[in-house]
Image (cartoon, rainbow, N blue to C red; front, side, top):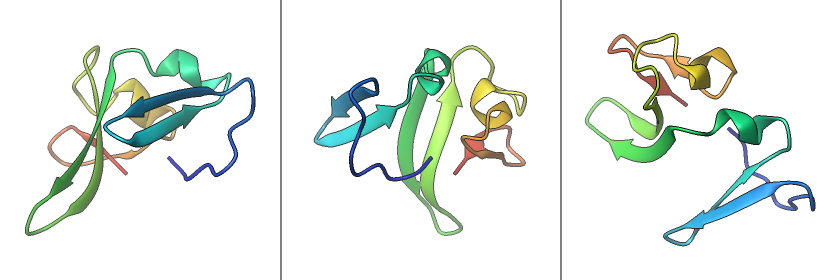
Length: 77
């Protein structure tokens, strides 16, 4: 996950609650079934990516470099 200041014409841009998410032509096929949330706790702050297809650490998002697997089986970035 990274910031994209100038999306290309072929990029998929989705705006949710005022935040734009951008995916390139290759990556957009991997986004089906993913949810992105921002969480704050006493220990951690950041984005959490969850897959409705696979909830373990083998989740597609982790496997393709969108995050790292935490001890609780979630991908965190």
